[in-house]
Length: 252
Length: 261
Image (tube, rainbow over all chains, first blue to last red; front, side):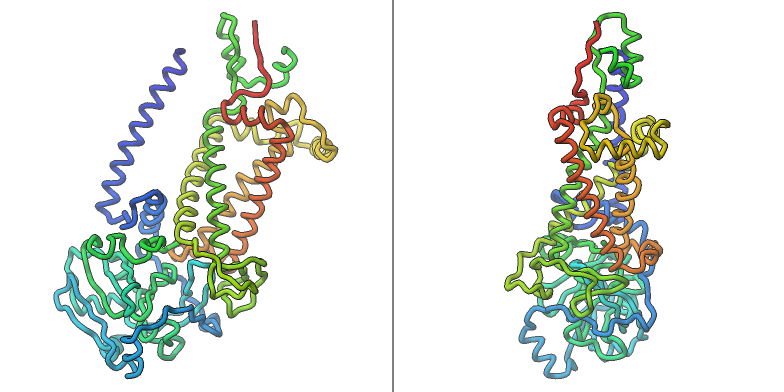
């Protein structure tokens, strides 16, 4: 073995050791700063963690692009929706007067809100793009109450880390971290383009977060649970999406 | 083999052989270990990106220009293929199975690996002079005349010269530079421009392209250009001698054995 190759070997070994211990350290720091997604296991965990961690660092306070009223899509596409269940049809027949959003978990004052109550809070609107993971998109004006306002009303515990939300169709549930839950553009949406939110677009109540793809904007939501861990929800992967093969974090 | 040595022997080989007095077989490298490793990682990632990218396109094989586009708006063009979503009117009587879940996971994972590999390649290429020595056309080749001679030789399907076992000709150099410094950056940029979170932090990524749907359409065409490069690259490797070129990129040894007594 020549000097050159021995030196290369030593340098290579040191670099590898530094790399491995650096990775371990990075993983611990990332965990403590909440940069590890719940679906970090498995063969795609590396890419998923890199995407979530880097985007979280880059976008903690950034705002989704807002558009001019003239850019609103003429026909907001109502994507195919699963057949709505009996409970939904009953509420629809009653003009959604009995629709309730239950808020529970790590909150000081668990509550159940009617649509009228939600509409009594300061209303906000945003003209943002809804982007589907398939590739299509449309722009609409979304009207609602910021989720942060409702979380303020119920009072969240300081150790809260995620908000889990689910549709009246119990197979459809998602969760977001507190950076997204408290983000000013994350709305509980009840209106669109100056009118009620149509059923096809998620009415009467839809979670809307424009910095993630459409599948995180769950339609027909009836329940919010504030939690510090996603382990006890479903298979512990953060939402129904990873259980059907899709990523939990959909910022890309 | 003196002739060959005078043509092109990497610097390391010359230094090594003159320093050593014993008769040796010169173990010189056509491609450095770093170039070989990054080449194959990139090749693997490109295939993963290609397969997963095709799967993702199948879920909406329509392309638009501007900010928005969906089945209710007029597309720029449509691919005449069936779709994995019933939402898309394709003219086919069937819907393909949904493969977007793993495709998206794989697409972004491969993108991360290839971007990090590419950064390593470029940084080390600047540091070691690989980019300057092996990819930047040599002084003699930086004339229109040299360039047209190379193209003419190419169009006549001339066989690669002995020297080309050791070095890239001017067309290869320019093509590789174009792929590394134009196509790859473009495909990364247009990819990022489709990320709603990324553009919330860096809006110019997408506004400079005229909208998210424009970014998607450009992403498609740049990927197509990369695919054309891949096909031509493989064809050229076969023409130049599949075994010797593969050996050079796997073991580092060039096609010609050089022995010194």
